[in-house]
Length: 203
Image (cartoon, rainbow, N blue to C red; front, side):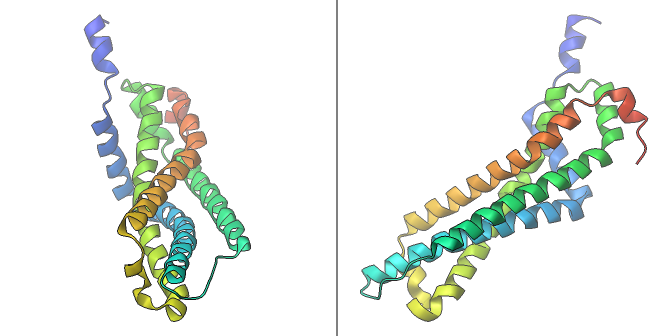
């Protein structure tokens, strides 16, 4: 094999990974939905607490009473995020088993370990982004429902827009990070598959 053939054999760009990751999410929408929902629920709990705290501070500055989020609620949030990560890891492991033949075929066609790893990480990043956005929206609704009857539902208008945007960006980035962390082990496992064994694997 010439050097040119070797170089072309291993080309796999980020846009290729994005396209393949998006196609797989569409083909396995049920499993992707479970992952997204798991991430969204954890992030919504986090967003609800952070926004509730922001609403309480805005309420105090407006001359209302002093209110605060209880410490135990943050511990519950931490547990919810851990459960979310474990759920995504389990779902991605099952996805790896289901795609043994597909991964084996890709490796026989020239895909390297790094390509398989990138494919799974990009797929998890897409799910993490969607889960983060949905989780933040649910968080806003949850925070308004939990504080609105005390502070007034217009309390969201008294919180600086920059603070809300910062919480949105922070929760979305955290969602992507958690999704990637949850996918690392399944992705490494997929990347290290022997192509011959993968093609002969039976579910």
